[in-house]
Amino acid sequence: MRVFEILDELIETVETAKGVPMSSSAVINRSVVLDLLDDLRDAFPTSLEDAREILEQRDEIVDSARAEAQRVQETSTSEARQLVESARAQAEREVSEASAAAEQARSRATAEADRLVGGARAESESIRSRARDNAERAVAGGRAERDRLVSQHEVHRTATAQAQQLLDDAQRNAGKLRGDADKYVESSLSDLSLTLQRLMTTVERGRDKLQSRQQSVGYEDDSFERPRSSIADEAPYAEGEVGPGVFDQDR
Image 1 (cartoon, rainbow, N blue to C red):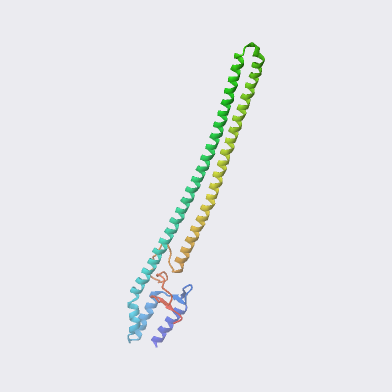
Image 2 (image 1 turned 120 degrees about the horizontal axis):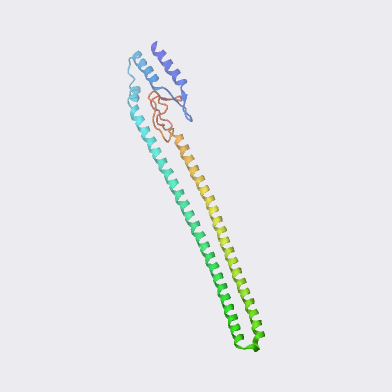
């Protein structure tokens, strides 16, 4: 009978169809199956109401599945955007805190250097002032105090040298403090760089998870188009559901 021949062709089409990953279902060319069903209907005049209802409802089933896929895609996109925004905000906070700490360290170092230099200058001026006063008193003492004047001049020279030495030491200390501050800033920025790298790694992992989730529901991020001749690219169905052109071999 022609009916059994058509049924054999339909069974062969299902058995040789490409299987859907992680499922007992298979992807079948819709036009081929519909042609076989039309032939079967013509060869078998009795109407199969249940099969006809399923065919009539196929557009509704496809629209429902497509809407669910769109909802999942929008949810995934929103979660990815929130993850990126959170990572960006955290990175900005890290940069702000590191910059503030570096600026505070530099300000403290500069203030300490200025204090040391100012103290050295004041001490130098005090020593010079005392030396001048002593020299003036020696001159006022007259010729009898000439030897003392010479000695006092030596004292003045020595005091000036000591004052210059204090000033040089203060400037060296100030330079060292500035160098230490620069090293601290460099170390802080290096730590910040490592933190940003870890944040970027976290973002990449989040994106990988989202892509894996998108692949598990059977669609791509940038395209939702499907060929008209095949239902292989139709929106994914939940486990146990059957769409047009997809038959569960376990049934």
